[in-house]
Image 1 (cartoon, one colour):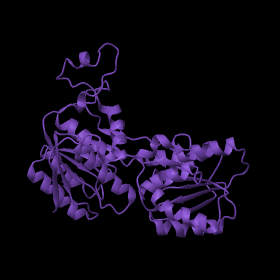
Image 2 (tube, rainbow, N blue to C red; image 1 turned 120 degrees about the horizontal axis):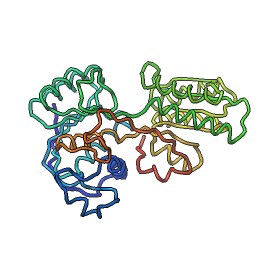
Image 3 (tube, helix red, strand yellow; image 1 turned 90 degrees about the vertical axis):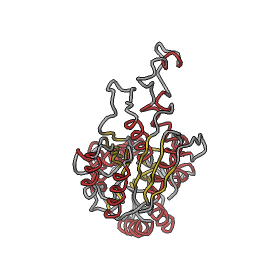
Length: 356
C-alpha cells in the first residue's frame, strides 16, 4: 500500500479555516490541564477559572495511522484534509496516512500494515464498517488504540472510541426548522418536499425518519419525495422530476449539499423559487447561497470528524483524558451535533464549509 509519513513539526495557524474551526470545537471539548502538571491551574489563574490549553502542550510523541475513503465527494475530501491538517498542528504526532480508497480489501491490508508497524493508534473511517470490523478488532487485540470515525463497526470490541455525525439528528433539525418556517410565515396546508440520498443506505433512512418525526410533531408530513445518489447529476435529475410532479412547493429539504449543486441547477433551470430551500451537510456553496439569499438554510454534518479522531487518538495514546468532564477518560462514543445554519449564523459556520 501507499503510506505517507508526516514527521512531527509545528505548523501553527497556517492551514485552512476549517482546521481552525475543528481545533476550536475540540479544544472546547478536550482541552484541560493534564494530571501530571499540578502547576497548570496556577498558570491559568486557578480558582474558578476554567482550565484551558493543557492538553495541547507537547507530550510523548505518538505514531498515528490514518486511513480514510476515496475523496470522490466534497465532504469526504474535507474529512481527509482536515485530519491531516490537524495532525500537523502537533509536534508530538507522527502521522502515517494510507492511500484513500473505496476498496474494503485494500483498506484491510492498510490496517494490517499499521498493525505490523506497531503504531500507537489508528484513526479509521472505514469504507464499510462491517467489513473492517475484524481487522480493527485485531488491532485492538494487538494493543493498538483504534478510533472509529463516521461509519460504525459491527462490534464494540473493534474500537476504543467512536465519533459519529448525527444522521437522525440532521432530519430532526431540518424538520424542526421547517415547522418553525410554517408557523412564522403562517403557511396553511403547506406542501413539503424531500430530496433524499441513496435510499438503501441506513444514513439516508435515519435522516428521513428524523425529518418525518420532527414534521409529525407539528402535524405535518412529506408530500413529495425523490431520492438521488449524492452526486450533482443525480441531484439535478431527481430535482427536475420533483418539480414536474409538484407545481407548487412551500418547503424542500435536500439531504446533501454535494448533490445540492445539481438540485439548485434544476431549480434555476425551471425558474422555481417559491419555496424555502433547506440543504444538508454544510458545504461552502450552500453557505454562500444563504449569504446571497438564494437558500434558506443547511443542516451541518461536520466534516471535522476525522480531525476530532486524530485529537482523541493523541489523547488516548498519551494516556490523557477529557478533563472538562468529571469522567477522567475519553468517552467510548461521541455523537456530534447537527445545527441549522441560516442567515443569522452563517458567518459563524462559514469556516467549516467544504467545497462541493
